[in-house]
Image 1 (cartoon, rainbow, N blue to C red):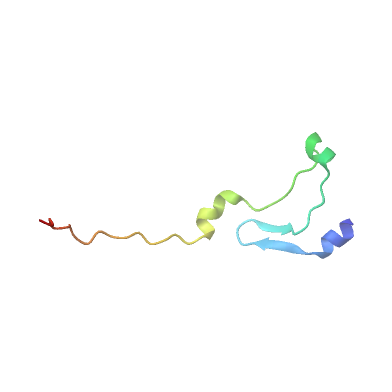
Image 2 (cartoon, one colour):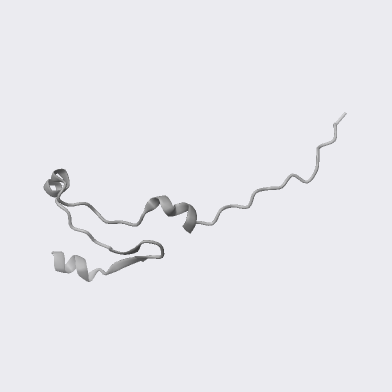
Length: 65
């Protein structure tokens, strides 16, 4: 099963390196702290996603009446 998971390949993150696409973890290993998943640093999302342009105020609104 682990051999098949490795054959799925790796995800290459532009900021954090490469990570296995399929990771086999056990509940017992997770609860004991012996295993943990590896994934890219999600706090860097601000760097990898484009930000929307902010609308600039061109002028002021004149009174309607």
